[in-house]
Length: 158
Image (cartoon, rainbow, N blue to C red; front, side, top):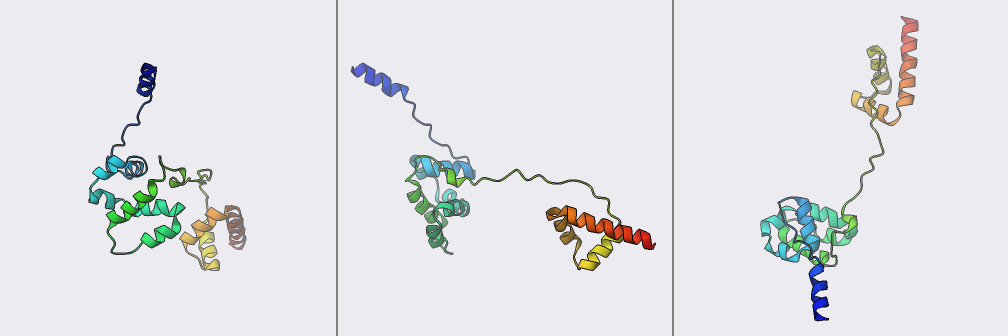
């Protein structure tokens, strides 16, 4: 029976200790899962990631993040405080990684606009070309329809 217990213990694989390679993501992994590796890190390495750790942790703990967001504090000590909070977790929680909606596609259609009509449009609404590009981004149909109308009027007059 003792042999069976020993065989069961041997089959259970221990997770490899996370290795710190200087990147933020390896640091986050160590912060949440590997206490021994975290203790080996220098104060500089801990303080180097303070800003992003502060941002990540403020997602779940906004009031604590606000209290720790004081100028002239030692960055490594702030990260040590977050490590005390991170001991509640055995692995990196999902709320750390915010998702980005990639469903929006960029409309790269080239629009042939008469320069004279564009100049008239910009002058009429008192906007810059940058504002015009933003207007095209948010309501392209409306803007193009109006510019086409201006082009027709210019051609009719000229």
